[in-house]
Image (cartoon, rainbow, N blue to C red):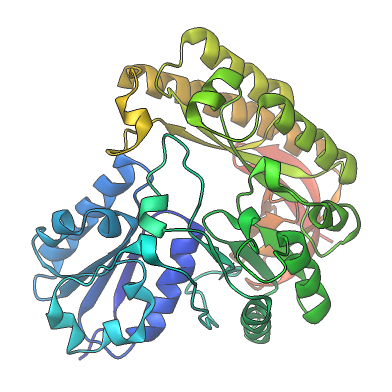
Length: 415
């Protein structure tokens, strides 16, 4: 009996989207395991290597195909792992021709990602086991933050044209998805390479007009300095545009931000948060933060911790700094690993405190929750919600009243 391809996905929402593209291309292959890697941290790479070894041990006859950012950056390293039959670059993994039975025997196929000039649209109508859909609108990054290796895995910034995004969203809505998340490597740079250089807010506005049946539109991580006026207007006045911002913050210290070569300072982010909360007072806010960046002293870390606490950011993604070979930061004076972990734990604790305070403010409110299971899901503000009693069909949007706060988020009753 044939076995459909198994896909192991690591890393970002863009990888999740691309795994579904590969699932469609590889549907006719038998006994294949696809590992879609991430290169953001050494830990992400370690987990992928561990998964490959486990897959080869459990299914020694299966052919393993490794792709994603880590494979793009260092294909030989992944090719040498036991059981790996083929390594594909980030461009090749999305091409149907890479997934024929004959192609599986051709070994490595990894082209120069820095030569990429466009992003080819793909039509995905299903995300296995998920009730919200991701849509790629942009690829690559033209910035060079000192800690980040991802531009070398993804190449220069390229935008998906409006028409292709609209077609993709329409197909997903027709398949039953009520919420779509726009994703990419640097989505607020969308449009810079298109005629007229439209901004991301224009794409969102046109999507909501051209696909009126779409109930919820959400953004993945955004650069604080690139939020355009159309996005602000949508946040303020469009109920289908979700009241949630996830900011690529990285640090709450101006000195550390400068050493990271970020394009914002602390005051810029504080201004964005204040404006966002003025638009939608109950808005949820998330942020990516790196703990223990090289040269980060106790005093500089305290600046970040004080900023996170002062702003009350409920949804933090905290990463201990991870050296990425070939990046400028990897050559800077390092913070001890144990200190990075300890600082990350303190930041996460601050995030948990902010989350509890934020969820407490939502008590008694009516929330619209997209159910991801029969008993749990996320509100428009991206607050995690669990039903106190009863259940409903996953994929539905239900109105609930928040009645309690627990360690995982809100507890609510269906109205």
